[in-house]
Image (cartoon, rainbow over the protein chains, first blue to last red):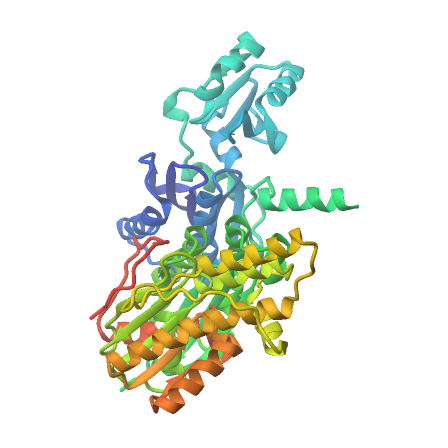
Length: 233
Length: 338
């Protein structure tokens, strides 16, 4: 069974090919390049290195969000077009769960987060060894997240490129309860994405057409429109 | 010789579209998923909303194009996609889908300019004759393009501010019409007996450029003055006055350019070429001038992928190819490919 994994949920990029449970190829990079320019050439390069043709793939995994809207759409569009046209199943995995897998075997809980600007985050909290969600993916103020974590009253490992932005606040609120994954664990990995996807039941090939990113936020225009509708009532 | 079949994808604004074109002249299938029902509540196209809809629709639309054509990927010659101009987030969906599809099936990629597509919509109606003059009018463009042969484009005039379609949408808003306003203004103008006298922007004597912001302001000022006097405006009169100004300037400049460059054919392209007032005016003028005038049927005026496939067909023959590093070019200029 050959898997292709595509992770473009934020500025880092990771692509992996896993064959029968073994990582054959994986790239992880954080060059701040436009995913639109880099992803397809990298996929082609990995296929060539692995001496595989597109039709050899049996399933595709993609980080479905949350994250950068454009980043998510590029990864999902490529993953879904490949899956649809090659008639292979497509499995979506939370991009926060993929990141949390970097801290696996932590004795406590793992909090993955992405900066969502204006002191907000996309975040979720996972069990330190199983990487099962304890608090599901959501959009939250950093304060709200820290209160939730304080109530959990367990050691928390923070992972992600954006933890530095909130480090002061985290330490002020959680003190010794918080620890921080080193920068070597800050980039999401395609191999983890595939590992997590393999735990899910394989969806039908017909489900590919309706696959969409999980933004975890409606657009500003829609939010304003809903507000206006309510005012009008 | 084998038939050439091009799968074309277009997502530059708020239509998710895919088509299959045979030999550059025949539409085998042409699918357009419009977002208009979603976007009209915002009074215009919201880029983030557009991008989200494109991701939802993209594979469904391509699948439908292949199914309607009763074709497999292996029957295709190449994959074409709009590279720009347009909304960057929207362009990226079509481009990445096209790249993934081309990679999966080992097909060549062809990057197409959106305006070249609009012009080549006419190649699906009848053969293009050169030299040719194209008047491109849409929500984002107002250009006069001279073509001396296939793949050769010279922009001899363009708008210096608002595009004609943009002015239509803004004036429609003044008249409290729903988005998109063009068809409503066109209808009101047809019904009107007389119009308000609004200015015409001719610019310098020899210029083929356009300007519609002054006209737009004149309409807004007129409404404002009437409001202050407590008088109701007559939407029909305003619509006719506005449309008469736009149509007269577009027609006059197109005619002057057609004469100067001694063209064999004049074509209209872009969403605003669906406008009845403009079509009728151009038809009358060029019939009298005895220059063949062609305008595509309505469904090929608005954004679609068939036109992208038509342009790509000629580009394919000329050897133009894209690659997997292709990016969306929101401000892409119209350049010759020969």
